[in-house]
Every structure is written in structure tokens, then in C-alpha cells.
Length: 196
Image (cartoon, rainbow, N blue to C red):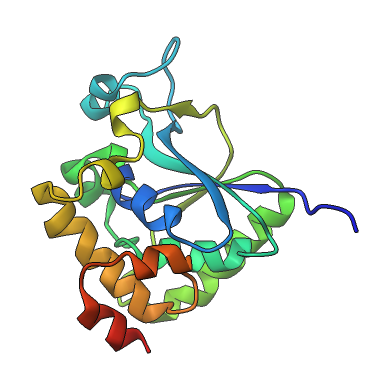
């Protein structure tokens, strides 16, 4: 029996620490790298350059996954549920252009699936979805201290105030999507009980 080829998803929507924490816990995901994509600058952009807004890059995650464990469409649905994809251009740039909502497709099938997901989800939002759907551009891994941020800093205020509630919300929406090891490692047993 041939081994299924691993696939790649590249998306951005808010802080890459949040997206990394979410995708690392999804069943079928093999690897998640926080990084930058969608801008221009000579050489490898730094976090400081990206945050300045001058390079045009967004904070993204590049996810390597096994399509037998997670489909591209399912990963996109989880992604779209993890952030607000309806911010206006002015709001995006006030908040920081590096946090804009983006789907970078790696092939024509991903493009078609992305178009379908955006069209299907639009009726569930009061405002117009502003997520950009673009062909993949050069991806640059973020600095080492950004990698595995949630796993290394679970007690940090940002993790407890922002990432933990996102994870709890998504676990309730998609209860079957999570790796069993992550569910069992949760400190809050009430959350576990509520998912059954």
C-alpha cells in the first residue's frame, strides 16, 4: 500500500502564536512552523521589520499534514473559526497589517477548495469576509523564540488570556479534530467533560 504524500497549508490570521498552538493540536498535523509570507524585502525578514508594516509580510503558519488524518477543507474551516476574517482594510492596518487574514494556496486544487470554503462560510458572518486568497509566495521561518511558543510559555499572560480561550472554543466547535494526547493533557477537567 503506497504511503500518502504529506501536504502543506499556509495561512495567516492574527498572531502566529495562536495559529501555531491550534494547528499543533489537530489530528493529522505533522509539523507547524511560524513564519512570514506575503511581502517583499531583500533577504530574510525579521520580526521587527514585519511588525513595522514596511515589508508587507504577514505572520503565518506553514502546516505539514497527512491528508488521511485531516483534509485541507477541514483545516481551513478550523482556521476561519479561529480569528475574525471580516476586518475592514482600515481596521486591518490599525491592528497591524501583519495580522491580516490570508490563505496561500500551493496548487490549483487548494485554490478551488479555498474559494469554496470562503463562499460557503460567508453566510455565517454578518460582515464581508476579507480573507485574501493568494498563490504561495516565499515563506520565511520566524526566529527560534517564536517557534512552539505556546508549548514553551503556557503560563504566560498572553497564552492564558488569548490562546487558552481560543482552544477551548475550537474544541467545542470541532470536538473530533484534536489529537488525543493534547486532550488528555488539559488541566481543566471541566473542559474535557463538556466535550463528551
